[in-house]
Length: 212
Image (tube, rainbow, N blue to C red; front, side, top):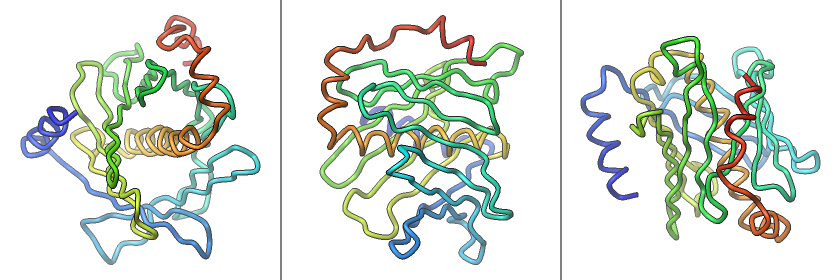
């Protein structure tokens, strides 16, 4: 994972464009707000609501409060899913006890065929580092979370297409934060533990092509 982090930093320096976002949590509203880190005067871009009782995450455009996506938080399965503008995306666990999720993306593809994308995570005592890898296993986004923070919980760095395209950025936000919230749930849910024990990680790739 340290090598992945170094590669990410090297790619960030050589990328055509980068964009930095920050994630702030409001205890009063119990919501997360994603804003541009490069422009301190900017208004929030996204609002993220975690509906714990419904096991659901809502992703809203902060400009008009419309829902652009949802995320699921299953109580047993270690696979999960999200939706982006009505289109389902399956996040398939590749390993039982490590955060390694693959999904199929049209937004990152240069052809009509979807390409596999992967979210991985390195968890430390203070910092959780989520990295999104493209089909060539090159980093395109990083979400660094301060596990002990109470307000400014993390920062998102986007590279290349993820920084340039709003459609791609939306996908990174929805898939990445769904994986993050699901990881938090899995870390404290005994049912997900047993779900991992009896799961078949990495299976069903052909089936997932039907979701797109």
